[in-house]
Each structure stands twice: as C-alpha cells, then as structure tokens.
Length: 210
Image (cartoon, rainbow, N blue to C red; front, side, top):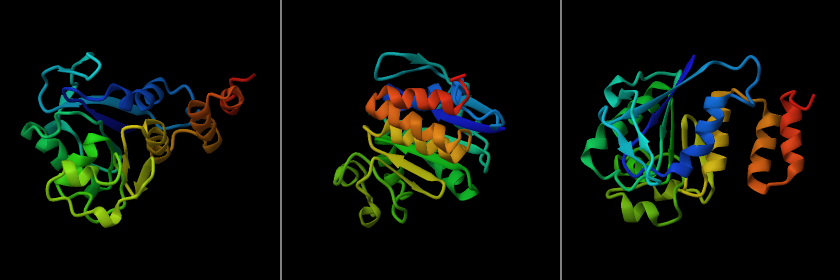
C-alpha cells in the first residue's frame, strides 16, 4: 500500500491536480499487479478550502497526521496562498518526507514555498520560468540548479511549472511504479497531442483494446 497525500489549500490551482488525481483515483490504466494507492486530502486544519476554480474541498486529515516514510508521497499544488504562515508545517513535512525517502511532488507556487525554505538550494529543480523563484522565494539560493524543463525529477523530488501538469503527472506515476512504461508513454502522447493513435495505443497496452 502506498499513500498519496494531497495538500489542499485555498486558491489551489485545480488544473494542476486534475490529471494526476484522475489517474490515481480511477486506476484505469494501472498494471493488474500495481500496488494499492490510498489517496488522502490533507489540510493545514480540517476546515474546508475553496480552490481557484471555486470548488469546495474538505481535508481527510490534517498535516500533523501525515505519515512520513518511503511508502508515502506528498503532492503540493500551486496556489496564491502559500505565503500564509499556516502552511509552514506542510513545507516542514515536505522536508521530513524528502529526508525519510518519501516522495515530494511540487508544482507552480508550491515550488516557491519549497525554495523559500531552502529545500531547492542544492537540488536540480524547475518552476514557472527563470527568475520566478528569485521573485517569489526570499532567500532562494538554488539558481545554479534551476532547469528549463516542464518537469524535473531529482531522486525523490519532483518539480514542475504551472503549465507542466501532464509531464508532472507522468513523473509522479513513474515514481509510484503503477503503470507499464508503454501505457504511460501513450498516455502522455495522447494528452499532449490529442492524436487518436495514441489513445488507441493506450487502451491496447492495458488490454482494453480486446
């Protein structure tokens, strides 16, 4: 069993989580012998939050209930509210997760929160473009490790910019090791290009074509 903790906060960017949550929750393209995935929404408290798109979400657990370990993954979406001090425990938990061998996947504004805490100072990473972290992450010292890429994986850390939801999702699924590589490639190709050939290749790769 692997546990994916999804940190939710007011103004979170809905589109950044949409692909990864849909695939992890539905399991529609998983290998037949894939590990079970438990998805839990996590909040600073147990109070509901409202996304950028106006969707109300309710946490299943609070951040202090997150179990840190190699079988855990913490998803951190972008939001306009990461600078609120009440989210500091979530960033501290991300640091603990990285140290313990768990996976942390941050996208968009969440990368700035990690950068402000010094968690990107010595690791390859990406964000919303060169200069973004310098602008929004006081004390950031990781510019030498910044990569111009849609998504970057460095061991157990995954980062992406606001437009990188699809490659970010691919990286998360790869780290969880729940889809065959051929299916995952077809998935990314289809949702990136819209070419129907990739759609049929995807379904055939998981046996749905029969």
